[in-house]
Length: 168
Image (tube, rainbow, N blue to C red; front, top):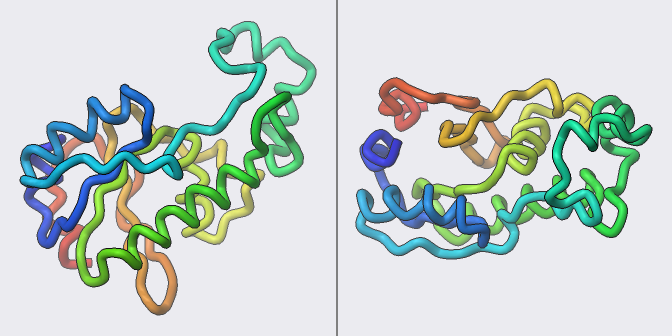
């Protein structure tokens, strides 16, 4: 993946969520590009509060699980954040990073739920439908931010040449 991403033109920076697993993904990309990894708290995974670390099998038996899946915009994790707050955080962070590097490509390494909410936002899709978007570990999602708004170039790419993204 790092080699594929490094072939993109004008990469100005590589940012990563503070979580170790994201930094481990970002490091080879940054090395291939020749820039440092910048830790960015705004790219952090959703704050699942009291649900953090619990097995999905256990969580899926909770009565609130149906709300998480069907009406996420109306749900707040006990002791954590809401999906709406997470979406505002990730999209605000991406906007700030894009503004910091005008005319350049920025790599932002995050986690599935924040990426899915950013894609939903860029597509103009209601947050309640974001669970329909699939994001795999170490996949590439690309969004171009321009004066006319965002354009989704790729979602959940796991192989292939990324060169066409440079011409979009």
